[in-house]
Every structure is written in C-alpha cells, then in structure tokens.
Length: 257
Length: 257
Image (cartoon, rainbow over the protein chains, first blue to last red):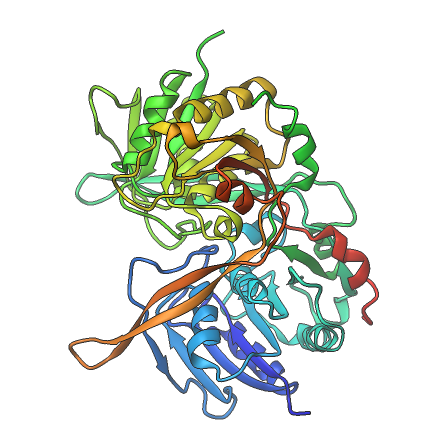
C-alpha cells in the first residue's frame, strides 16, 4: 500500500505560517499536495466563486520544507477544494486537512470559518476531512506544541475513517506543550458575537464601518468545545452539513397550512 | 399592539425583483425595513467582511411600492443583518425574512446560500428568521403564484414562533398557482454538485476557470425538500446552526487518544 495522499488547504493563504506547519507535519504521514488561496480568505464562510474567473498556478513557496506539489488559487477555500478534486489531483485524496488556522474556529465561529468550509466541502465529496485551528490570531503563533496531537488525530482518522456526513473541527488552545492536557470529543458550544460597528468618516466625508465584536459564551455545558479549550484540552467537534433540525419537524407539522 | 417590524434582506441585491416582491408581500403584514446588498452576493455562503470597510446608504428604490425605509450595504447578506440589528433598526425586529432568491436553495445548496446565511445570522441573534427561494434563476421569474403561501408561512411564524436555534429554509417550485399543491415540512435531501470546471485561456495566454456543475441527488427519501419540490409542494426545512453531529460523538470517543 502506498503512502496516503493528503490534500492540504487553508483560508489564511498559501504563505501563512499555519499552513506551512501543517504541511511539515503531514509530510511525515503521507504524500502532500497543497491547493490554497493566493490571498487571505478569513471569514469567507462557505463562499464559492460563481461570478468571477478562477486562476490557479503551480508554485514553490519553500523548496526545502514544502509539499510534493503546491498550487495557489484565486478563489475561496471551498473553491480550492473543488478545483483540487476536479482538476489538479490525479486521484482521490485519502484525507483533506485545512489550517492550521490563525485563530479559533470553535463554537459559532464554525459558521463563518473558511478553514472549516474547506473541510466541509471535502466532506460533501465523501472525503475524510479535518479543519485545524489554533486559538492565537498572531502570525507568530507557535504551532509546535500541537504537532503530536495533530498527527495523532490525522492518523486515527486514516485508520478508523470518519463517519459519513461528518467532518472534524479541531481547535487547539494556545498553550505550551506541557500545559496541553489532551484531546476531548465535544459538542459545539452555544455562543454568539455581540457586534460592535466602529463607525468612521472617510476623507471625502462619507461614513463607513469596521465590523468588530465581542465573543459571548451562552453555554454552561462542560461537554462543549469552549469548556475544553478553557481547561487546556484540544477540542474535536464532529460537524455535519445536514443542517436539518430534525427535532423541530414534529412541531412545525402542527402549523396550520 | 403595533404592527410587527419585519427586516427584509436578500443576496441578489437591493434592486432584485425577488426582493421587491417580498417587500410587497411583507407590507401587508407589518412595517418593513430593508437592509440589502448593493450588488449581487450569490454563493457567498456565510461570509462576513473582516478585511474591508462597510458602506451603507439610505436609498429609495421604488417610491410607490418600497419599504418604510431601505438601506443598501456594501457587504455580504450576513453583514447586512449584523448592521441592521446593531446600527440601523432602532428596535429588535419581530421577524427577519430574506429572498425571494432567484434560484433554489434546497438540499446541499443551503451551505452555499447567501439568502440562508442572512436568515441564519438573524437566527443566531435569536430573531425568528426565514429564507425564501424560488426555483427559477431568471430575473423575469414569476413570484406571484407563491404570494399566498409566503404570507401564510410568515404569519404562522409570527403566531407560533420558531423553535430556538432553528430558521426556516423555504423553497418554492417554479409552478403556476393552480399547480402548487401545498406546503410540506421536510428534511434536507442528501445531494451534491458534480463540479465541472470550464477551462479557458485569456487573451494574455493565461489559463483560467469558470466553476460550473451538475446537481446530483443522492437521496431517495420522500420526506426531503427535493421530493417535495419535484412533486409540486413548497418545501420548508427547519435548519440549524448547531452543526454538531451529536450521533458521531460516541463513535469518536472510541478513538485512541
């Protein structure tokens, strides 16, 4: 049996340190091909490019530590996965990993996450997929403490498979290696962002806004990703793209139609 | 009790015929305020604007048939809802509706849908929310046959409330009024897109792609939105933003961590 083929992508762009770290870790497990955005795509959710052209180029970012092949793409993370599967990879990857994101994608952030949309896109195509995020927005973030855990999760996924219709959302607390307590399977915490718009006036006198906000945890559960992260654990949330609220069907059937 | 305040948005842009139809229908139910993108945002998924400024302007699109107030916004559908709730509306809306989208958002399309991301964004904020889509991509689509059903669904939601954590994804088959058979509560059908990239070469000799694809239904269930639409029914799927695959937690807990 040959080495597994691993598709690597992200949403921070092909030169992001988090992606370069993930490539390095994945090269110890299999053959790595990268198809990643040519520019940052944070917060792009599950956007796809319908109204514009897509460009892709084979490039070498890091001759020594890079992947077998690397391609930049002008589109979103979801576009990258579609293009990789349909046009770039000659065969079906054994697994698709995205990240390591610079910043958390836990709880409600999964909805806005380009990192997770790449994983979900691969999952829709039936490919085992995992998104990795480190709870540190800095470009100088230290990914190394999580290396062992990341490899372990990918290896377990390759050995056991991931249930159909499910992708994994992995978040890593920003801790040194000796403070990481382990890996916990969790549910997505209930949370939202209390938006604050920073209103300014441009030099031409026109008002504009910057979107900012404060994270608001609305969940006291100890089985959530937020609890795990706050207590030193790496959180793994099985995440699905069947969005049906099955539990609500019965109630809606009582409506008067 | 005053008239309900209805926030209306969409992803096809503030001048789209589907939005104008929805405004007209909602004006028979309540006071309508529109905050909608100033340009088409189809396929933008749950994108938000983190790396750019947001502009918003109070405008009049249609003096006779327009809403009480209308605002265009340079951002995505999710941005529009955030800006509406935080900056534009003086009070909390009683319901938020988006659409009527020109084109289906049934089954897996919900993942890519700007229309539904607007509804989900309102749902995250605890506001009852519904996305409406007509299965006709044409700008000349006829929304009138669905008018009665759309009003009925909104009125039922105002009377009964929508379960917390749930928003409604309503799709309408492209049929004349006498061929519409009724409204069915459904689950999201399992389906995906078989991508086809249309590869071309630009005048400078550089290759580029257009993303196209064919819809592939992978579900034989008769309780799905696709079945309902194919059989003349308006489909209503309760849709959630807790993406946790709760059924998979037990299995993942057997992994060797």
